[in-house]
Image (cartoon, rainbow, N blue to C red; front, side, top):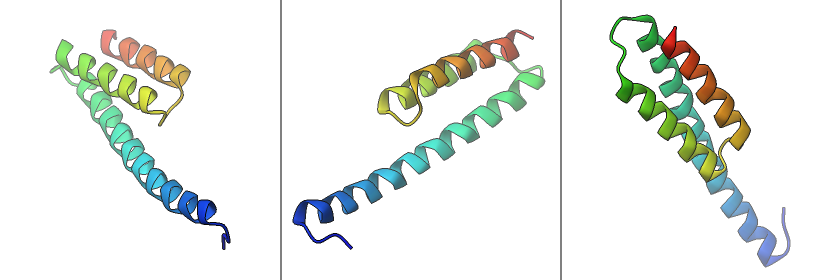
Length: 83
């Protein structure tokens, strides 16, 4: 257990941030899975690709995922979309 006041605060803030990041990652994974299913069907739309790009950019900006991982996922989603 932390003894200092600042350490106690860091425990609270890091717990809240961890829960927030976990929720964001879950939403991101779900969106990617839905996009993959959408790409296998014939109902592809440019808006869906735009939405997945925007979601990945926001996650990278928030620091939930690294920027290079977002770029790699965007590249993979683009290849899957154009297939």
